[in-house]
Length: 174
Length: 292
Image 1: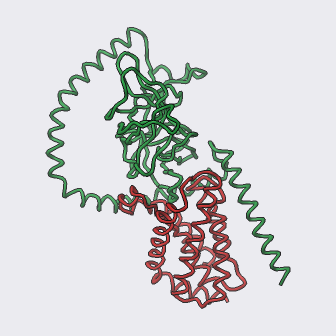
Image 2: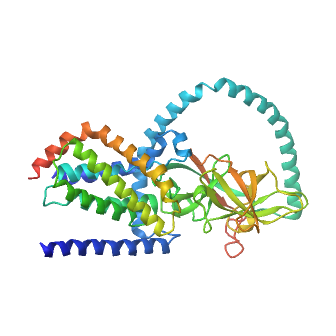
Image 3: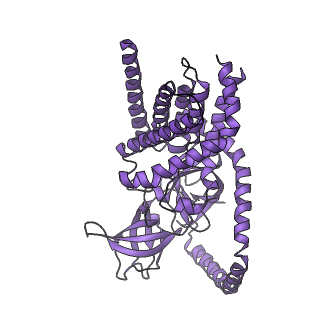
């Protein structure tokens, strides 16, 4: 029963924290050419997809749809962008997980891949609707690479705290 | 197997159509949020209010420590400035009194300069840096309306994009484009002011683009201060926007563009003032709160 509430609660708090995440970074980083976008919500969703979901459950994809939409409403005002990108990529990650063992290195690999694909999807949609006109080379260098690295850092930092409860709940689901 | 594969494809296709519909909807109905969006914004805003307090405390403590090192030099400079201010205060008082007297003679109560401030604090900044929005903790309940100017003590930072009951979203100057622009002016003597529009932000130089529409006999030059102008109809006049750094020709060579350095720090925003124009619009509601 508590499982039903705990994930939405964690995801909601993480989403709220993303709103103040940029205040915690030094301002020189924000003023410069580099853009660092926190995808903490997505990182948590990857944990859920790899360590919690069984082969026949779709919790991560469901949460990606719900909280992606919430993110769009609260932070961007353009509905559907994060919802679609997050849900699609979590679905792909979920598919790839079946081929690999669920350990730390696989998590790292799949997350780097997932964040990059989600970022590219968001970039593509924003360019198509004309909100952004950043050349792809600038985007890759100034936004994609720093963003992936910083989010991997977040993933590694929370790993010791989140892995045990996640594994425990995962076995309970069976 | 084949059946499942086509089912997956079907779901993804439906998802894609949904995406296009949602984006189309949200780009068309800009200006106001629908009911569900308002409820969500209010609920999240309430939590953000709670979360924001400890975060501000932590960032304040760290910035205090780093500022501590420069306190001595700053103190010297401020003391000098203070002695200059004292004489200015006297002048200002004189002029204000005179202004009031003259106004009472010609029976003029409100001007485009007057406004009622609504004080607010920033509770969140959009993690998606392409949209350049911050959320503040005042909404329609406090009298905030769409398109009001938002400023800090230093100068203009943006305008209200949309509102819910307890929160509103501010579009920062850095996110301005052809659809979100501000009429601005550079003051010159004898009513030959320079007019133009702030219509964009250059990420590389971190400068606002001020397109000059009406030139003046006296040329625009480096160091001129750009103010908001009442000619756009939406904003009060006299709010500092920034300082001219460079003047260049636009890509067709027809008009000129001044690069303006924003007066307010657009990256470190805590407390803001929403500018509620007290002068009534020409149509309607003139007998309401005109006299007090």
